[in-house]
Length: 261
Image (cartoon, rainbow, N blue to C red; front, side, top):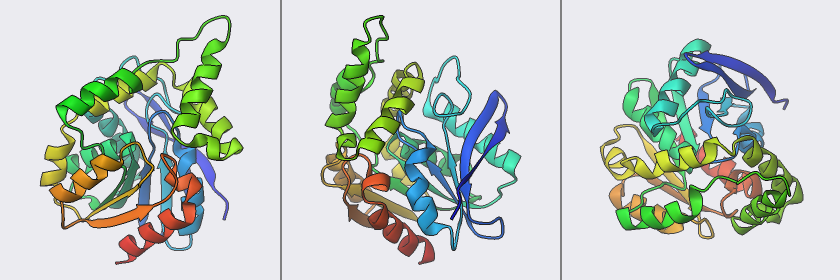
């Protein structure tokens, strides 16, 4: 199955996206983690393309999408991506977001519940205030670009620490995506830590599905999300922080079962 690329328009610029399946199928929209791009869902898109019209978006500041001056909060990104859906004339859809992308998808489900048929979050970010303080120490620092190039080694080592080193092609792709987004990365992380994920999750009215792997950095938060919404479908997969790449079959199987159900 061929994955094509295109752009949608929002009020501040162009949103880059990948697409598979056909327009007559139910839409599944994918939203990536910081600081990846929609490329992280390509294998899952291929696995679902026989039954679903898959759209994988690059968030503002990431991949091939426009670079914003600031990312004040998650709602900012959600609003721009809703505008992209409007431009594509997508009226009804299933949402699937990974880490920060899960925060965006959750915000979208709150903003346009009448259009959302279901919500899947891979690695829900349900952090306490104390945990947010600790996460900010690690995950909101930009790659300090300097003439020696030492920041490239720092970025490479960081990606290895969260699981990208399991596959060299993945590791290299993520390095490129992270360098493209080196200014947007700290802004997006800060927006994620400032979002009231627990409150939005508790009040979400759409069918829910939460997914994680035990070696994901957010595994403890997954268990918390399950406690907040015991009615949600729950799936444990493999793949550290890169489940759609490193356990594409498991993610695809779980997502298809939820969507078909």
